[in-house]
Image 1 (tube, rainbow, N blue to C red):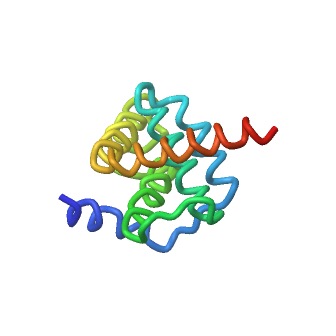
Image 2: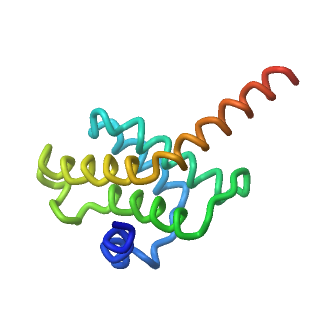
Amino acid sequence: MDKIILKFFNSFKGKKLSSKDFKSAIKKAMNLGATAEDLLLIVNLVKDTKEKKYKLDKKCFFVLTTAIVYVIAPIDAVSDLIPVAGWVDDATLIGYVARSYTDVLRDYKEFCKTNNEKNEHTN
């Protein structure tokens, strides 16, 4: 299954994410219903990895980054210019990626929880 994901994302391979892209992804998450939480978690994970606050292997980083790029791209499998239908493919993709990387997302949630607890104790 990973080969399918990697092949699918190759069209987004060279895209770098900016802070504007992250903001766009967060805004877009509001349209994704149940998968919004997963997208927000993925966005934060990728941001923390880019800022070297969290370590993630290159393959996983690539897949999660390109998932964000796919979601923020206005033209993808179903154009986001078509309300609702354009968001369904994004939500489906994020749901699939989140299920495929359940362990990674769980570990990142634990990392965030531990860091928040440490920060609370030092303040």
